[in-house]
Amino acid sequence: MAIHHVLIVDDSKTELMYLTDLLQKMGMSVRTAENAEDAFRRLAEQKPDLILMDVVMPGQNGFQLTRTISRTPEYADVPIIMCTSKNQETDRVWGLRQGARDYITKPVDASELKAKIRALA
Image 1: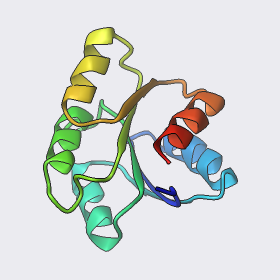
Image 2: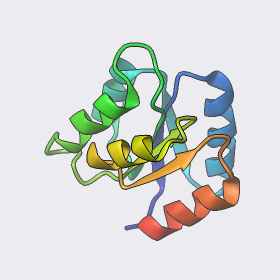
Image 3: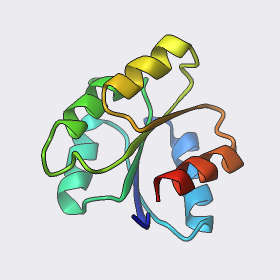
Image 4: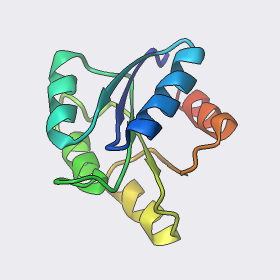
């Protein structure tokens, strides 16, 4: 599966700008959402090829949102990479149990993220 359209869900404007810039340089089109409500609006507008998901957000957190998206039939095939400052092994395991395909910690290393995206394609 080629990855062209990415949805980034993160409440940090700095993180959104950094990841958007990184992915656009890789030739991908990027859309952003700052919370669960925004994310579902973006999903309804256009189904992405990949979702990068923060964990710590106001309202519904990234673990809850990942579980909801991965259990929604029309989005269950969209891979989710958790992209978070939560760096404990238990967090990684929990994120994968919620339906994430991979887990990367902040600050995001560009080459590590590129490798994880390539591994999904």
